[in-house]
Amino acid sequence: MSFAHWYNRTLNRIWGFVEDRTSMRKWALRPQPDFTFKPSYWTGAFVVNAFLYQVVSGALLLLYYQPSTNTTLTACGQPVGTQSIAPAAWCSTYYITHSVPMGELLLTSHLYGAYAMIFLMFVHFYRGYYLGVYKAPREFSWMVGTLLLITTLGMGFTGYLLPYTQISYNATNVGLVLALRLPTVGPLIGPLILADGTSQGLLSRMFDAHVLLLPLALAALLYAHIALFESHGIAPPASSDPLQRRRFTEKDDTKAVPFMPHIFWYITKWGLLYVGVLLGIAALWPWNLPTYVGNLAAAGVVTEPDWYFLWLFKFVDFQGVTPVIAVAITTVLIVFVLFLPFLDRSKRTHPRDRPLFIWLATSLLGFFIVMTVWGGETPGIQIVPLLIAETLGPIFAVNAVVTILFHWRYRRSYLRRLAAREVAFAGVDSAPSPPVAVPALGSAEAKGSE
Ligand code: HEM
Image (cartoon, rainbow, N blue to C red; front, top):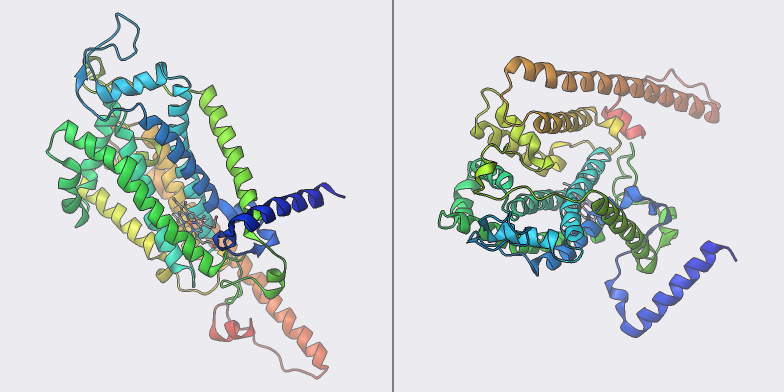
C-alpha cells in the first residue's frame, strides 16, 4: 500500500468517526476538483490562517497590555536606575517583551504576523486580479474582498499606535490628518476617532477599534466572503473561453475531493508551517521596542509608518501634493478596485485577453514597490516634480511597451491558430472551401467562432 493511499484512508477513517459522532457534515464546504490542491488556489485560506494566529496571539497580549497614557513612576521592568516616567501603554509593552516568559516572541510574532497577513492578502488580491476571478459570477466576492482589504489595513493602522512609541504616535497623527480628509467618511469618523481630543481618548478609541470593532467587522465580512465562495465554487483556471470563467467542467467535477477532511487538512498543514516559520523568524529577529511618547530624547524621531503605508507617506512628500490630493487619489484607487468587476467588461479571464487592465495592475504594483522603498529610504524628504517623473514615468512606460508586445505576439499566434483551424475544417469536409477571412480578435465574428 502506497503512503498516499494509507494517508488518505487514515484521514477518511478519523473524519468518518468524528462525523458519525457529531453530524458535522453540514459544516463542510463543497468538494473541489483534485487539481486545486495547489497553494495558488488557496491564497485566501492562507490569509485566514494568518488571521487566526493574530486572534490567538492578540488575545494573549491582552492579558498584559494596558491601553492607558497615564505616566507611571515604576520602572516598568526596566533595569533599576534607567527607569523614566513612561506612559502605561508603553510600560506594559516593555513589560511583555522583557518580563513575561516568551513575551518577546509573542509580541514579535504578532507584529510580524500582521505584516505576513497583509502581504498574503496582497498576494491573494493580485492573484485574483491577474486571473480575472472578479468576473461574473464572483463580482460580490471581489467587492466584499475589497472591504476586507480596507478593514485589514485598518487593523494595521490602529495596532501601530498601541505600544505608544513616539514614532507610532507621530505616524498615527499624520495618518489621521489624511483619513479625516476622506470625503463624507472623514467628517463622520472624525469625532469617533478623536473622542474628547486628548491622547487618552485617541488611544482608547484605537484600542477599541483594534481589539473589538475591526476584528468583528473582519469576521462578519469573512463570513460573507466564504459564503459567496461556497455558492459559486472555486474559480477555474484563467481562460480565453468566455464560458470557462463560471465553473469547472463536468469532468473536473467527477474528480472532486471532499472539503472535510482532505482540503481542510491541506490548508491546516500550510497553517502549521506558517506558524513554525513565523515563530522561527520572530525568535531570530526579535522586535526592539522604540522609545515612548514624551521622551525628550525622542525629539528628533523620524515620522515613519509601517511598510504598507510608506507609499502614501512618500506621496505626501511630493512637491505640490497636498493631503487633500493624496486622499483624493487614494479614494479613486479604492473605488477603482471596488468596481473593477464592472469596469473590465470582457468575458475572458486570461491575462493575455485583458492588456489594458494587466498594464494598469503591473504598473501600480511597480509604483507601490518603488514608493515603499523610496518612503523607507527618504522619509519626510520633499521630492521635486522632475525627479518624480524620472522615477515613476519609466514604470508605466516600460510596462506599456511590454504589455503591447505580449498582446501583439499573442494576437498573431491567435490569428494563425484560427486560420489553421479553418484549413483543418476545410480538409474534413473535403470540399473546396472559399478563402476564409480571419475575423479580428475580439470581433463579434471571432467570439462566435470560439
Ligand atoms: C482578510 C482578507 C481576506 C481573506 C481572509 C480572504 C479569504 C478568502 C478565502 C478563504 C477564499 C476562498 C479561496 C481561497 O482560499 O483563495 C477567498 C476567495 C476569494 N477572494 Fe478573498 N480574502 C481576503 C481578501 C480578499 C481581497 C482583498 C479580494 C479582492 C479585492 C478578495 C477576493 C476574493 C475572490 C474574488 C475570491 C473567489 C476566488 C476563487 O474562487 O478562487 N479577497 N478569499
